[in-house]
Amino acid sequence: MTETKLFKEIAALETEQRNPVSSNIDKASTREILEIINSQDMLVSRAVSAEIENIGKAVDGIVDAFRAGGRLFYFGAGTSGRLGVVDASECPPTFGTDPEMVQGIIAGGREAMFVAQEGAEDSEENGGNELEERGIDKPDVVCGIAASGRTPFVKGAVNGAKEKGIFTIMISTVPRHKVISLGINADVYICPDVGPEVITGSTRMKSGTAQKMVLNMLTTAAMVRMGKTHGNIMVDLQLTNAKLVERAKKTIMTICNVDYATAGDLLEKSQGHVKSALVMSLGGVDYNKAKELLIKAKGFVRVAIDMA
Image (cartoon, rainbow, N blue to C red; front, side, top):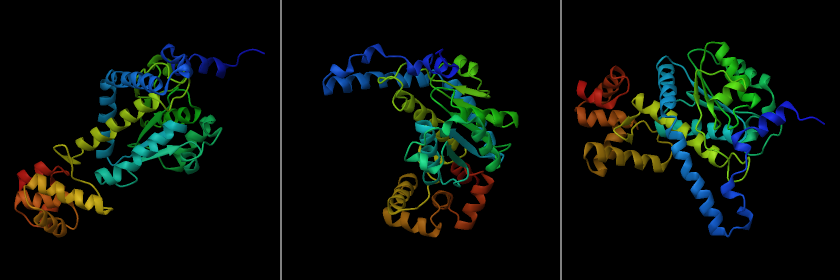
């Protein structure tokens, strides 16, 4: 029996190679196992750092899309897909975004978040079909996530989006030239080369950590560029639970230098909208004027205050 094309593709991936550092991990003590894992995790940040320029290009593309009314869609399978769904789900409570603005699509659907759906990632057609079913088109952004760079579901989504003229991003943890050679056609490639995993092929480890770091950077930087923070403080959070209500009060206290009771009063008068509360306090205006100024300032609190 001869080796298949798929076998050769997978066997050649960096993430499928044996890591010499952990080759005898089964003989190690608990502490030694943890030290091996930790020493390898330390390499991830440097690998991501080497991709800052490409991450920046992706962020700029995402910001342009958001300003034009577009959305960001993550496509992935397995761990990569779950990471995309998690990042998307954290945007509304953190940045007050509409749930439609950032969406995570995982091969196999909702069930795949909790139980592996074997074979769900093996169809390029399924990835392409998702574009049509969800009405994904310009000025949306499609971001594929695949540690191997070869996942058919992701390939179908990214290549299909590229054909429609949609801005596309590909995140992988193998070298860029290898991702391109596997047939992924993207506008921006983000490829932190994390090397072999501690446990051969277990890409939920270093690869997953690198992907999570990149996703955090993409959405956080884009939201900062969209005026979702004041300095380094979240000011567009949604008050969906008691913790977030108290966090909102603390935010107002910190930025406006007021006491707890005053912060609570401002939050009530602003109908729970932290940005408006800040402009009301620091700009000396009422709620309606604060909302008007924020619209003119495109959501940037500093600009709205200066305009007051």
